[in-house]
Length: 125
Image 1: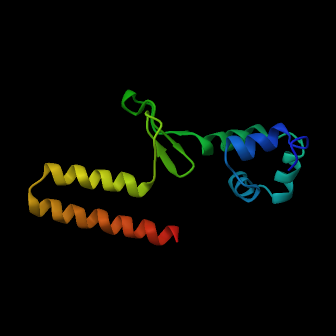
Image 2: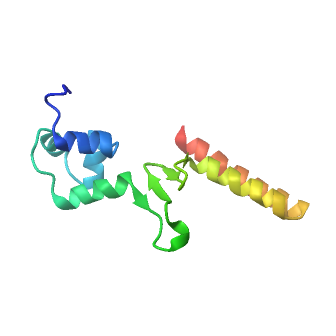
Image 3: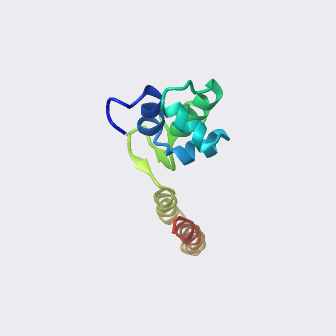
């Protein structure tokens, strides 16, 4: 899309939320044609805009301990700004378990984490 043709809706959908036309249509239960009309300047319904905002930056909880954490697309963003994939979170949990438990319990938990990581790898392929 040319810079001069870019509407606020297109900028919001593509750059701010990181959503493709197809992803937006699926998320908002609308047709691809409708999303293309939004990109050309037609008003986005408030409920759809709210869904898109929720998708691109989701808070994890209301308690103080989760302050600064949020989900962005498919990654967990830490208060430090680092974005972690599911595999990284599982690996960190496994490392913490290794440092804290007796050897047998560690091996059992580590095997469980490795199976979970393998499932994620299969899903992502």
